[in-house]
Image 1: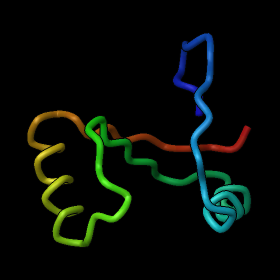
Image 2: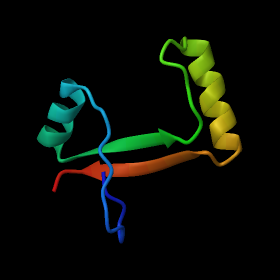
Image 3: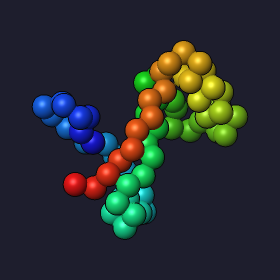
Length: 67
């Protein structure tokens, strides 16, 4: 991932299915939460995390495009 105007990019872990989808479609929506979320979080914890992150401005939205 590279932000417009940034000198360096950022490598993010991804699943092959998502990578294949982005490659096939050419773009996809990306959400990035700035606060940690446990890997074993259940659906209710994810919902709460997203609500809190959105309210506090700690959830970023973007469009991922293949280069």
